[in-house]
Length: 229
View 1: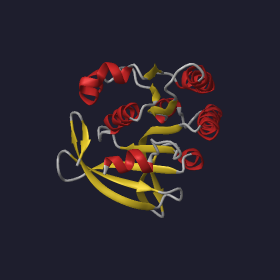
View 2: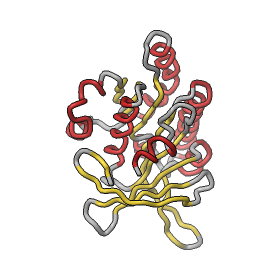
View 3: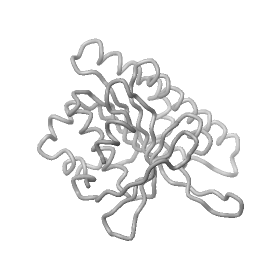
């Protein structure tokens, strides 16, 4: 089932490039799945840009998922640690340069840009009492996603965004939604939610289409080296 995600839904293969988000509650395994995507992209003979927006890189998870291929996989990844939203905003303008610089001189092409996570830093700066600041933050989030969509369209690069879970009220009922609201809905046509089940290490995957309609569900077991059947 993971191969189905890697090759068909997220589009880690030539000719099927997509913009895709993976979202869910804290600790459900989003980062581990993102590392598996980076590993699969290397196996498919492509390079990746991995933007990590939290203070401490997940060294143990990286070691566990990449295993004996650790050095080989890391050599095919441009790793960028961005822990400020404005820095992430500025970085989005430089991604095209990194792609062009690599693809004109290297045998392996960059086929994947993965951000873990996009809205963490955005939500840290939101303030209900500062509407002007929030307007600027929304503008920057729109711009980041617009730059990523440009790379997807013009260079055929897969964009995978690890995102957080939020909540909103619909007809008096509180429901779980992807963070980023209408901005994410506009730019990201495909998404997948990961959620816990009654079994300790089992996770449910729910795939959504561009209209946020659930189109497929399945479960996977989470282990230290990643998800598997």
